[in-house]
Image (cartoon, rainbow, N blue to C red; front, side, top):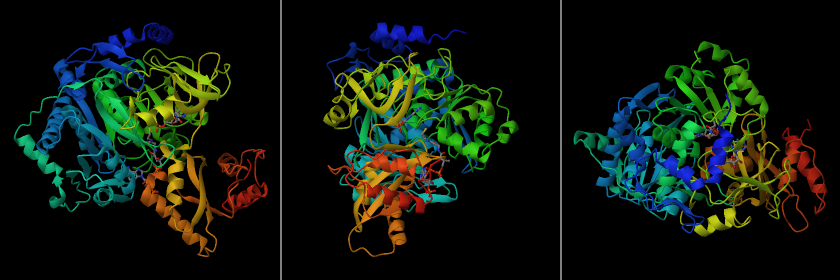
Amino acid sequence: MQSRYRDVYESWRDAPEQFWAEAAENLDWFKPAEKVLDESAGVYGRWFVGAETNTCHNCLDRNIAAGRGAQDALIYDSPMTGAKTHFTYDAMLEEVQAIAAVLVNHGISKGDRVIIYMPMIPEAVFSMLACARIGAVHSVVFGGFAAHELATRIDDCQAKAVISASCGLEPGRVVPYKPLLDHAIDLAKTKPNYSFILQRDELHAPLRYEYGDVDLAQAIEAEKLLGADVPCVPVLAADPLYILYTSGTTGEPKGVVRDNGGHMVALHWSMENIFGVKPGEVFWAASDIGWVVGHSYIVYGPLLAGNTTILFEGKPIGTPDAGTYWRVIAEHNVKTLFTAPTAFRAIRRDDPEADFVQKYDLSRFRALYLAGERADTETIKWAERALGVPVIDHWWQTETGWPISANPYGLGLLPVKYGSPAVCMPGYAVEVLDDEGHPVADGTLGNIVVKLPLPPGALVTFWNADERFRTSCLEEFPGYYKTSDAGLIDEDGYLFVMARTDDIINCAGHRLSTGAMEEVLATHPDVAECAVVGIADSLKGQVPCGFLVLKKGVSRDQAIVSREIIQLIRDEIGPVAAFKNVMIVERLPKTRSGKILRGTMQKIADGLPWKMPATIDDPAILDEITAVLQQHGMAETA
Ligand code: COA
Ligand code: AMP
């Protein structure tokens, strides 16, 4: 069948406001928009100005009114605990209203910020929706971040409350959350009024009632007994739904702000038109609610579209084996799976012949979508062979909230070009510019930018930091949003995303800032200078590698210093940083103007061909770096 993609893209380009106004008709509004797009509002314009709505109403109440009350809204499948729990739309509404009532009774109201620091349990999703229901702004923090990162976020958004759990579960270990939370609150200048703690059976946390701790499960039960009935608070389309902090180029994370109106319109549109899932079907994003993929495609997208979403608390391998994903797909009738290429590299490593696939009935499974990092062709081809369904690379970012480019199953698939996340989605006019801002010829590498205004669903600003948003994303290429990705567009309009232009690395699909790691390393008393680069890793795509110059006179055992350094990153940023490579070197290679040659070090470590930079201050340093890397079994040319 001919793809409708080109016609639909053109219809958007010809009349963008009409396109999104029509998409908005599929959702409920308490008050219609005065303007579909007000270009003079906000930093670059605002969508659905003047409209009133509520995102939770559109996720739950609207679908129940349409007859979906008895349909599963969420299936919690946890190989970590053995739990498999189904929540219908009706049941979910009851849970969400109970948490909303708990929040309201503790003084949380419209506009207040609530941090959600939770593992992959249903209450995390219910809490997000409860905030949305009462107009509070949630900010979910990934469980793999340490206390300091949590404290930074509490302070930046001035959280009035935190919703958390007693523990998370990682293979082979229980991660106690409460001590991390208590430490974060000690570190933070803003003291939240309440910490709502969900006690899990695997570990109970001692609660400090005198400091505002509340046993969440007890509070929920009490509200349910009272028959909690919490109406949706009308919010403006332009009001913030959530803040999601993501890595910037410094240690200070950026609070991406998502609005209510544009967000729900874009996500609703994407479910059927991009991912090709129809209302009532099961969609699974195997990610974490702490990341944007979790926000958009575990929680909001599928629920807005009347799908059943899967909340999976486990890993692609080891919980218990490399067949877990196939079990979940077969058992819950998943039509479309979305995950990161890393997950498939892990599965392939454990089960190269895909033997586990044979054990499950995947005949109803339709498509696999991969994003979050560059999808290598080998992995895509392996997945295609193993699963016999289209394997679709698509590209987007925390900032955009939904795919910038994809091969749209819903509109009809286009031919696949390996290595390319295909074509721009309606809403995104993507161009490639050179460093001076001039368009480059087809097939030429440059800065990937998106013409303003950004579509509904993309970030509207950084929390309390309009100016930072302007300067870091909009200033360098006037009239465009800078994605900080480099790549090219070929003669057929296919995009190829090659690398970041900043210090962000992608490790196991997790976005990390090497600059933030350098800031932490510099605080170690023995460290004089440091540089962190992302080096190639066959499983995680990239992992960080720290090069450290110790202060003169430091004579301590280098192995001990290295261990301390690794622990420091773990304590300050969190285990998710996966910081395990430390190279202690005599000197760092620099240009004559003092700029550290991180790119050259990265190439040497990866065993790639590299050229002596013309501006290098002392070429001999690169030999020293190579020697140290070789001692660690790296820098071998292929
Ligand atoms: N809470 C606490 N700790 C966490 C955590 C969480 N939510 N998530 C990860 N960690 C810890 C891990 O336990 C690990 O700790 P360790 O150093 O003590 O072993 C560390 O952070 C690094 O985690 P990770 O990079 O995920 O590596 P891993 O070896 O545990 O797992 C994969 C490797 C490939 C199985 C895993 O990264 C994965 O499932 N990736 C899928 C990608 C994904 O979901 N991306 C989301 C965006 S789509
Ligand atoms: P995050 O904000 O965590 O979603 O990370 C976004 C970044 O991940 C992008 O800016 C890219 O650098 C990278 N990325 C995401 N998806 C892809 C993809 N399909 N191909 C290449 N890089 C990707």
